[in-house]
Each structure stands twice: as C-alpha cells, then as structure tokens.
Image 1 (cartoon, rainbow, N blue to C red):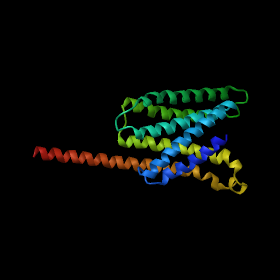
Image 2: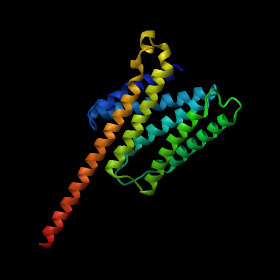
Image 3: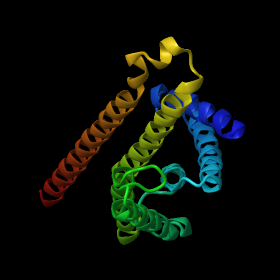
Image 4: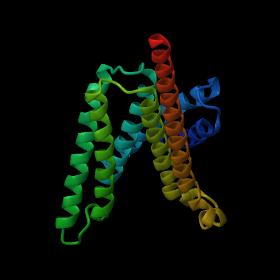
Amino acid sequence: MLLHIITGSIAVIAGLLALILKKGQKYHRLSGKVFVISMAIMALSGAYIAYLKPMMITLIAGFYTLHLVLTAYMVVKTPVKTHTQFDNYTPLSSCSLFCLSVYFGLQALNHASETFQGFSHEPYFFFALLSAIALIGDIRLLICKGLTHGHRLARHIWRMCFALYLAIGSFFGQGAKVLPETLSQSVLIEAPEPLILLAMIFWLLKTAMKSRKLASTITTSKSNTCKSTSS
C-alpha cells in the first residue's frame, strides 16, 4: 500500500509536469518516462492489492491504466507507419479487459442486491466502454500497419491524459482521506479531474488542426509541382 501511495503521488506530479512542459523537449520526455514507470508500478501494486481483497473493479482499473500508459509510450517510440511485436498483443489485453468488465457488470445486474463486491453494474460497464474504445484503436493500428504522425500523437495524448485522469481521480478520491478536512471537503478537490479532460481535448484539437494544416500544405505543394512539371 505504501508503494502504491508513493508511486501514485510521483505519477500525479510527473504527469502534470509532462502536461505543462513544452512538448518534445528534454524535460517533457524525462517527466513522461517518470510518469510511465511510476504509473506502471502504481497500477500493478494497486491491482495486486485489489486481488487480495478482492475488489475486481479496482483490479480492472489497475490493468486498464497500465494498458493505457504502455501503449501511449510505445506509440511515440515507434516510427511512423510501422508497428512492433508489442502492438500485436495489445488487442488481446484490451479485449480481455472488455470481457472481464462485461462479465462482472452482468454479475452485479444478476445479483439480488444488484451489486458485485459492493459496486453496481455502472462502473463495470463504464470500464467495458473504455476498454472497447482502446480495443478499436489497438485493432486499427494493426490493420493500418502503423499510424501517421498525427494519429500517433492523438493516441499518445488521449491515453496518457486519461491515465493521469484515473490517477488523479484515485488520488483525490480514496487519497482524500489523508488530506486535511478543510481541503478534503472543499469543492477545489473536484477541479483537477475536469481540468485534465479539458487539457486532453485542447491538445487533441491542436494536434488535429496541425495535422490538417500539414496535409493541406503537402497537397498544395504537390499540386504546384505537377503544374510546374506540366509547364
């Protein structure tokens, strides 16, 4: 538990730094690596704790977070329009998470109390939806045999940001118990999560606009080249 708390705290700090630092630069890459390593340890330790309790929703959340950070990290380490052996196994991971989430969600629906291990079907089906979204992206990468520069960045951004969103939700949710009462009862404690989602949307839109502008420039350049050749 101590390892889970320490690495989770490091992950939140490193993730926020990666979010605000200039993208692609030395300190952004460094904070990103610290974020990935600390998130991986936090997710695995959290999943182990959840397995011992047991608490399947936390186990699913742990492995889903691990899936996000690893796939987000690997996509920027892979050249454009190529894929690695690692990418061949990611659909198996996201598909397994989807199936587990649906299974436990149905268990909750069919139980007399309409809960499973203290949770209703909603959080299980929520992770089923998230896993389905990740699965579609994982399959698309394999079908396309790699991604363009813009799609690589989009995959990296949403997965890293959503992993940070889950970490902050856990930190200010369960972790709020150890905070001073004035802070834990404040409305400010709910602010970080929507801010992370807004930041994710901002960077996705910015990436999309840059990709469209680049594609337009390339098309115009090719058109001018063709006209020049024909002349």
